[in-house]
Length: 82
Image 1 (cartoon, one colour):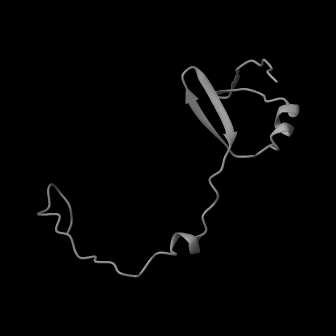
Image 2 (spheres, helix red, strand yellow):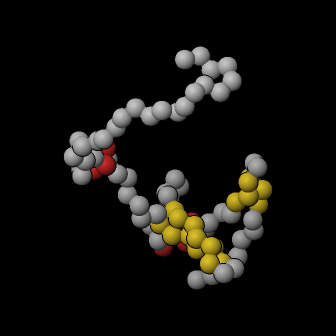
């Protein structure tokens, strides 16, 4: 189904209102995350599929092997205090 709406000023941005019947068709409601893609002359709005990654998931492949060392930034330039 196609419907027409108007882009309206919303603070310093612009926005559109999505009718409730459209949101219900794709199971979205207020505060749902969506992704917006531009293709040719169209905006494509989809449910966001990127799930939140927990801290444990972020470190799942971490082995603890870091090779950090001091880095020499060179001599002071200007009025830095060392």
